[in-house]
Length: 312
Image 1 (cartoon, rainbow, N blue to C red):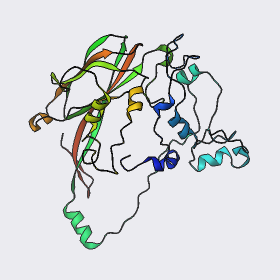
Image 2 (spheres, rainbow, N blue to C red; image 1 turned 90 degrees about the vertical axis):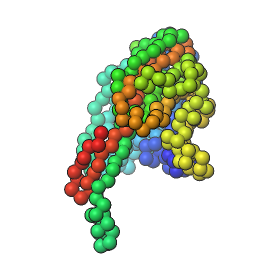
Image 3 (cartoon, rainbow, N blue to C red; image 1 turned 45 degrees about the vertical axis):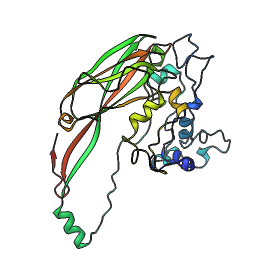
Image 4 (cartoon, rainbow, N blue to C red; image 1 turned 135 degrees about the vertical axis):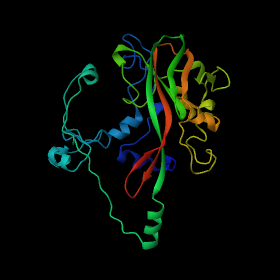
């Protein structure tokens, strides 16, 4: 996303990507599909990003999910041939209820194998020699621990020990989700946190010390400050290339709490440090908090033999 812009958004859906747009969400008063039964304050079922992605999923009994009425696809190509072409399509459709979709699901005829395509390259002699002489490569990547903090009532304060010790700890991401029996799902269902699921008096403690200066309101400005130098190019100051953060209105409606925990002396980087979060549920509804602890892993790769030497 560092090179994407809204001028190219017409191509995003073709690869199955389109950002979930919070502006499409709102308050629904006629249903409770995203809130406890008989509760009218909840998320709308509409998600513009999800709708845009669905436009490129084919349905042989209709067309795409874009509302255009034309000849059925089954008159043009069969479902069997679509499967052979690896085209995104519905392989099985079964009528059911929301409860069915959340509890049972339905098996389809989706391919179960992955194809690997490796391009053959013939290198020039001088490049090949340099490649052979410098065949050890250092590889660094981020991995994730996932935790959950369940059923925090409206107005309730929490002080939760997430982990006793994490090495090479980089950051923590906290995503507020609605705690209900009929919406016991996660953010991967619609890509958005609970509407207005904010946290007050928020802080993260690493090794027993506060990461943020004081327990306070975590605002959109806090979100920007914590993400700068983490994902942006040149501290997010270079024009044309940005970190692609969500805008203020989107964050206000669907908030993410990201805190960088990597700004420590080098001698503490590899130390095992505890992770603790605390705050107060500002939402009028009971909340769950999905917690992602992000840590760095490193190893050496011999590009000639394929041997891996673990560093940490």
